Length: 371
Image (cartoon, rainbow, N blue to C red; front, side, top):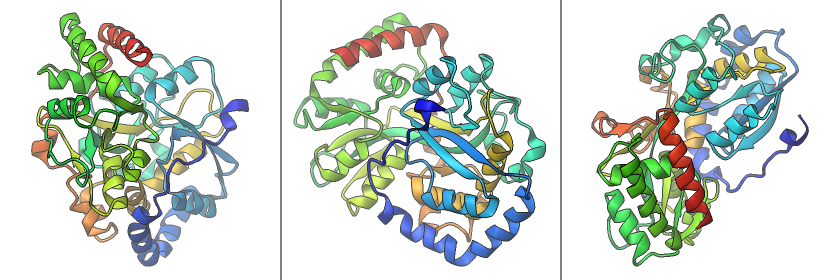
């Protein structure tokens, strides 16, 4: 694995966020987890799981319990974006057993022959997955991927430092270029930044129109001098510390900031719309221990373990809601930042692979970061 064995350090501490949910699950359901999983994994699962994932996206308790129940060790490696993941695998990296691309990237990776087909005979708990996360456009036959969790892209602002109450992308941009210049972060992510800007201008999140994308380019270049940081890993801590007062974030990041600032923050799904995404479990070609990957996926499809995960990362659950009742903190289940209502989801779009549009977006992003 060479350089891929390096473990990236955590950039912030979520102990305060996970304590209540983790304690609830651990106290009430620990024995059930052991009984249920013992019959699934069996003694045949062994060795090491090489897991290439987003940073801070797994509850440390889940790693601990997985190893206790299976004997399988987990070797962790992290990437900062879907594009970084794709580049790594396109570059010939092998030996990863499990990776977590967002839906549109799973579609690209599958089409490029970078993924193995899912063997559902090794996922008995796939029956726990909510049907609304099956047969989605990025993988209509559920050939390459199964869902991990889901969320939205919006922005978070500190309510004790931003006197305005922004609700739109236009307000976010205007405030960033105005009174809060130098105190705003955006995600280090091409689709989210270009797509959100397009939505602000009244266009589709997935627009490929050259004229519309030229307007996106101009908006981003005007914004660039006012940005504190372009980051997908440090944005939460910058908001929590107060160095940043607004930031483009995923909804789970927003929930972390709200919790760590004791409610002095707000997560916003912009009125114009934005992104709805599903992150997926996939098994790349060239893996070393696919049985360990399947064991991990099935383990996280246990409702109690899935609840542990949501309590940590604050993204929506992929399991049927009725399976989570009684095992998940009711406050999490009722949190509309984590589980947005249908009327919010209805105005959002999922990222699609756009062969021509993505070339333009890549050029915009290169210019934007260099400006």
